[in-house]
Length: 108
Image (cartoon, rainbow, N blue to C red; front, side, top):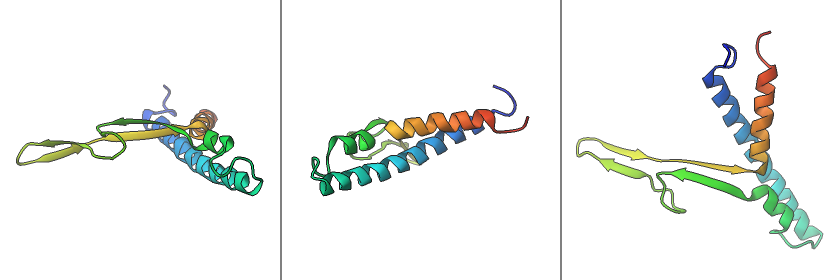
């Protein structure tokens, strides 16, 4: 990793790409869901809607679908630990686009 591609910069570009891709995915999923209703093409939950909105959900410290973190109670201090990430089709594409932009941006 060069000086211009520090670890913080890489992580920042990855998160920005994931967030923007997730927002685009939800917007396109809602658009294609409404088009499925209007065009009588499978209703709101049609296959194109599912391509954009279905996501792989990875979590550490959460139990099931309810976001309850792991709690470590040391009587004097209580820690709550947990982390979750939800990656779908466009958020992964957004991450790769952001990394490509990061590769060509910066000082030359």
